[in-house]
Length: 142
Image 1 (cartoon, rainbow, N blue to C red):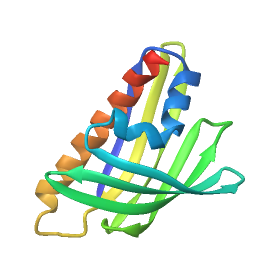
Image 2 (cartoon, one colour; image 1 turned 90 degrees about the vertical axis):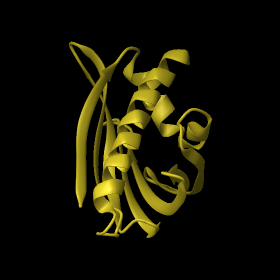
Image 3 (cartoon, helix red, strand yellow; image 1 turned 120 degrees about the horizontal axis):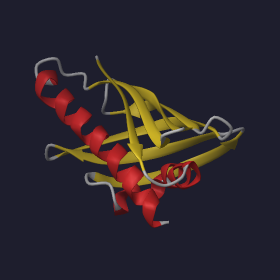
């Protein structure tokens, strides 16, 4: 299992970063490799479900996930419920302090194929880091 725990600072405001982050159905328009995101259900209480199609090293990966949106904490928790990964869960959190806005990502994932994990896990981590930067950058253009 791989773990990524990284905070990246950006310009802009917490409100803008939060707005971009929550609008995951627009991710395919600005996140390289994210082919499709569909919110499949809104369950109230900050819960929703979503379906994802992401390209990684020339292969499409698909999964469904449960999302828990905590508006007060500016935190989006997610957990794969079905799909191509053996394990995928974590959270995004928008933070603000005296230095400005930051986007924190904590994710645990496992591709489920031990023989290729050493090659695939770094590629997943690289993509997630790029998504984090692209979300921060996109929030400047709202």
